[in-house]
Image (cartoon, rainbow, N blue to C red; front, side, top):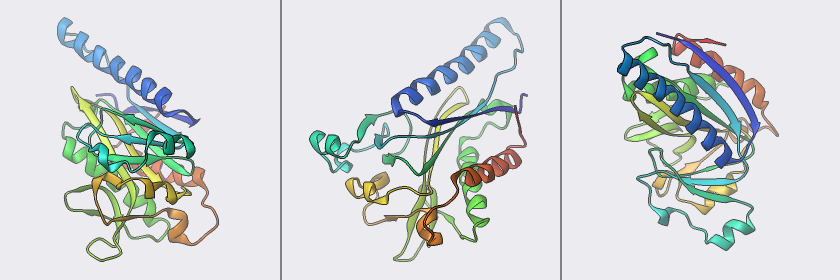
Length: 232
């Protein structure tokens, strides 16, 4: 079992370019696994964790409803945003500047073979990170992601999640609103859930800006601890 994770910060990168790169890494891991089974070999599979910030983009999961995008093609262009229908779970979400997006591309056979546990661990990474800023966040039953004030009229989502897994290899991941322009969420029904608000770390702390590099460091720390991994 290889618990080493190659950590890469891609900086600001186009969504489609990053998706293609994820697919390339994902396929590389799956190919090693197929070869191992064919030839009864034990070649270690690599693991990756990508950080990235995307230009304005809306993405719709494979089970999503296009009607949850409230913009026409021209309105998308006017807002400088793009749209992609993609192969992760979940409905529609937004990515953009001021948002920390994390894509763990892991062979779960190196860690544990349980997708439900994997999603709960991703949520826990964010919950523990927010706790360092004295923000209490939780899960919302039946709704993947991380929320504040669940069960009240003020419930709001701070981190969206959607993953794809095949042969125990994961891709896609989470999007944490740090300094994001929340106005872009007004153009969708986020995650297909009507009447639920979104928020950001900046809004919750009531500050002009949050240090995103510091947030990433905290995410890395909790991810490493929960997955009992090491970075390389």
